[in-house]
Structures are given as structure tokens and as C-alpha cells.
Length: 388
Image 1: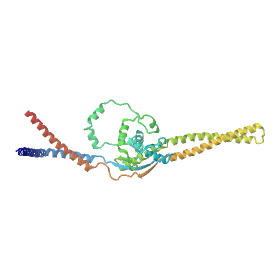
Image 2: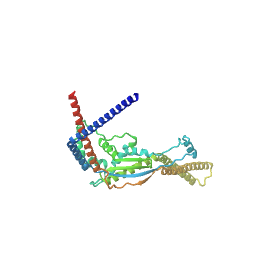
Image 3: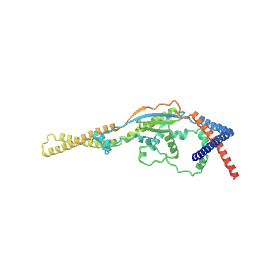
Image 4: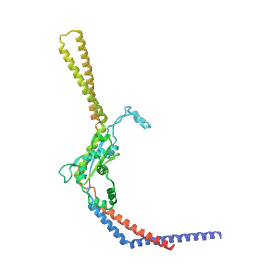
């Protein structure tokens, strides 16, 4: 009797669970059908939205400016500094100790190269470099081109006077700012504050996006990219940026050795004059006192000879140091292996018209479906509100 009662309760519970699952499945089917029906009823709005966004995407794809990317791959040759302690340092490194902490290194890490390319002195010098532009019969700088020759495209004009119209009005109402003298690229920019005009800052920001440098730590190379509307101009800018990068890195690397060379060169020039003067004084005295045998004359001659020997020793030592300093400068000068030189690109990198059209079409479909569901959701809330 007891077991039959338990079986009855168990079967009843199982039957209720099956009924509830069937009811939930039926509700899900009803909701899915209702969802599809809602989309079907709003199909006209979805199709119109997709067509409108397709038209926008087609307009952007057609009127967007063409862009070409020129690149160069370089491998910086870093000098390998070895510890004086030999194999002991490697054994200590295995034990977790660093015995090379006091070693001096003048190397510039490749991770700093992108910061050099994005620095204001670098971009200002690149901005003022002359290039050959299509349709202009003489070389001009990028700054002069965008100030006097460049014209905005259709997309820029439309966005400026539609989405950007409030900003145009606000800028027109602002008071005039005091004029700032345009900065000129020079070595003094590295050691003094830089004041750029608004036009220089705009062009600098544009260059920071169009001239970039990427480092690959795994393979040990750096990739320089330059983007322009003309393939030949892109190649020119990439080659100039590559030359400037090598110049900046070389100046940093040989800065200490060059300062030492300049110091020794100045001292060498001074001691050379002193040596030549002592040599002339001794020669003149000997010529004038060939037949003189007095003690005063011999003493004076010994003094002049001692001055000559001292001047000659200092002069010869500085000559050796000068030769060593010149060799050091050559040794410290970094070498860049150009794995992939700059070439004129044959295919444009932007715009990718099919991708633009696909993205805008997909965006139109999402907005159309979202709008249908939003209307349905608001209508449901409104009906429940009225019922309450």
C-alpha cells in the first residue's frame, strides 16, 4: 500500500513536469511565430532602411578619396655589448642575478622609434620637406600644399555642413586668437618650447595618422608606412621619413662620441699652433746663435728645446686621441639594413568599395530590424499601460 502511494505521487509529478514543458515549448513556438510575423509586417520599412543605407554606402564608396600606402622594412643593427666577466655573467643570470648593471649602453631601443616618428620636430621637418605633387610644376612642402593648393572632397564638405555645422558656427563665433609665428624645423626645437599655429597643428595631426612606424619584436624589424592620395607622393614621403628616422637615430647614437671628437679637435688645433710656434722659436734661435758658445745661449736653447719636446708630446698624443675619436664615431654610427626598400604602390589601399557597401547595407538592416522591434515594444508597453 505504501509503495503504491509513492508510485502514484511520482507519476503525478512526472506528468505535471511534462505538461509544463509542453506548455513552455508551445509558448516559445508562439513567441517565435509572433517575432517572425512582426518582422514580416514591417518588411517594407526594413527594405526602405536597407536601400537608404545602401545609397549612403554607395555614395561614400564612390566619392571617397583614393589612398595609396608605400612602406619600407628596416632591420636596425644593434651592437652586442659583452660583459667583461665572460661566462660568469650567464651563470649568474641563470641563478637570477644580473652582473651587467654597471655596463654603459648608448643603444636606442627600437621601441622608441615610433615615438620619434610621432614627435613634433620630426613631423615639422617632414612637413617642410619639398615634394613633387601631381599637377604642380615645382616642388613644394606638405604644409604649403594643404594651405594653398589642397581642396576638400565631396564627403568632407557634406559632413562639414551637416554633422559638423554646429562646430562651424561655434568656431565662427569665437574671438580671433592672437597670431603665432609658424615654427621652423631646426636643431633648436629639441631644446626649446615649440609653438605651432592652428594650421601647423592640423597638418601635424594628419601626418601622425598617415606616417606611422610599427615594430615587430618577434622578427626584429620595423615597418614604416606612408599614406597619400598619389602613389608617387606616398613613395616620396616614405623615403623622406626613412631618411629622417635614420638621421635622428644616428644623431642620438653618436652624440657622445661626436661631442668628444669636437672637444679633442679643438684642443688639437690649439696645441698644433703651440707646437708650431715652439718649433719656429727654436729654429730662429738656433739660426741666430750658430757660433755663440756662451752659457746663457746654451741655457736659452735648452729651454726652447724643452718647450718644443713638451709641445710635440702633447700634440702627438692629441693626434692619436683625435684618430681614436674619429674611429669611435664611425663605430657608433648605426647601420640600417633595408630589407624592403620603398617602392611606388600600384594598387590603392583605400577605399575598399565592396566592403563599405556591405557594411552600410548590414548597418541598414540592423537599424531597420531594431526600429521594428522598438515600435512593437513601445506599443506593448502602451497597451499594458492603458489596461492598468
